[in-house]
Amino acid sequence: MKGMEISYDEVCRAEFDLLRSRIEHLFIDIDIGCPYGLPAVATFHQATFAPLSDRAMELFLAAGYRRNGNSLYTMRCRECSACIPIRIHPEAFQPNRNQKRVIKKNKDVEITLSALSVDKENIDLCEKFLQARYSKENNCARGYYRDFFLNSIVSSIQLQFRVDGRLLGTSILDAGANWMNGVYFYFDPDASKRSLGIFNILQLVHICQEWGIDYLYLGYFIRNISAMSYKERFSPHYLLLNKKWEQKKR
Image (cartoon, rainbow, N blue to C red; front, side):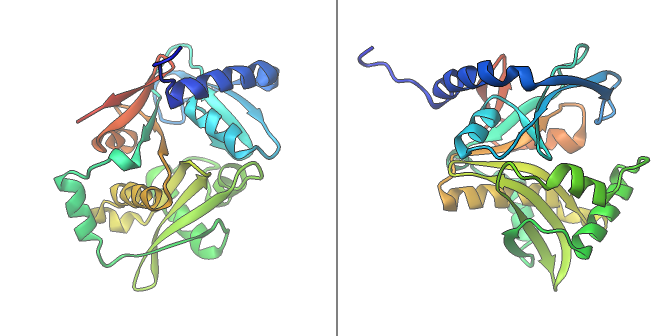
């Protein structure tokens, strides 16, 4: 109708509904123990894909899906709804006082962006991070790269942080024309005072602003898990609630 504007999210929802009607039969439900340690069975509704177009991946992200290797998934846990997709609109973001301090604290950090690669330096740092933070049987850096980070369905890159040549952190990213997907970030636990998780997101916002990317997806926000809840400190942010992105401010 004349005078009515259709929002970006409304367009995405309509396109995704058409896409899903053609591919939903490819998805299966996989039940495992909650990867975040919550006392519930986690149900991954997922399918494996061949290379996707930039627009198809954009629609999946806008619908709250995440990437794991060549699979895309959404959570359909029967007893829990703690995982809430979160995104930032970089153009509207304003750092708070603490985030400005984090930028100042890391002014000596050298930042490089390159193609996603697997080398000893990355493997060693990822292994150190996993053993310090998520030490579980069969949880290893090579497995994360093989099964989680590396893929053939979208373009992936890495953002690296160094001080005096020493690697302190690596951010695994998927990137398209108008979206960026933060897949994973690992860092040196010995550098925890630098607040590199916050610094990483600030740098992703900056890159999106420079590249003209409107939507930065940060995975899941989980209120009672500190490694996931700090994302809400970035304001304004948007949470996918009842299939609609709602703006939230701190």
